[in-house]
Image 1 (cartoon, one colour):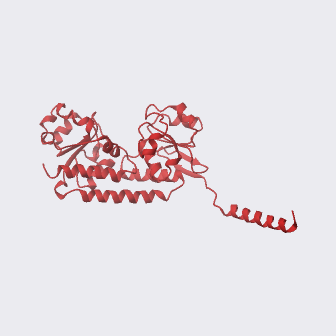
Image 2 (cartoon, rainbow, N blue to C red):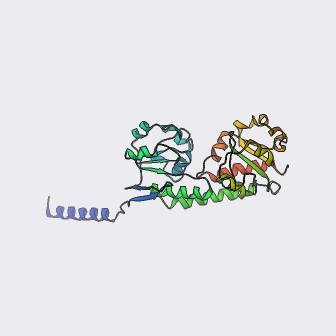
Image 3 (cartoon, rainbow, N blue to C red):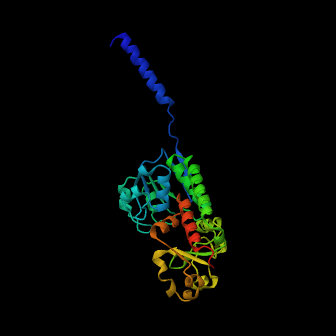
Length: 296
């Protein structure tokens, strides 16, 4: 190599070194999960396993759907996650299948019994849950931080708030003040006033017959709803057909007048997941209220 060529080589090498030094290094990520455990990552995770639909949806809305390598069996939105390996549900997630994915982060609910075993095997685990609107915002914030995109949480929350405002505009004045019973399951678990569903109903001008003192998702006495006499009953379409066979329910005015909002699976999925589709959930509720109108 000539002296001139060597000089250019040195200039190029120095330029490359300066460029590398100027690039920001990924700082370690530390987030405290909902069990108070510190979750530390050396860099943003690239192989994520999500074992809860609301967490799966949060990852995708925050722009990291491509980093998911597997999910629970119930995660079905957006469409792309349907093609991912399914590892089981809340109570029967397959430990061996999870390990086979070689994840650098596992997202799951704190009620999932696998968390401790996964940690013991050296996996990085974050336990995250939400039952009300502030907790959903906190969940999005923590997931965004774990993904290395903390600024995206506020952006997505603004989208949710905008969609909720659109839902409020969908509710006619005559439907405001409607007394609502929202059933979560046929075992008479309900969405109380303090749940995210209850808080959305409040923002839409409805009144929840299950007050906050009962907690977010209480199991009710079968006679409670009969005595409460709601103006409107909301539940999944799969449970609606059996309402009249429940003791005393055929005497309820809402049942007699057909004031029942039976939600198809696609809508009920949206409502059952405290995640980034809260705005869409509010619009499902708004359509139910609007369809019932002011008929009481």
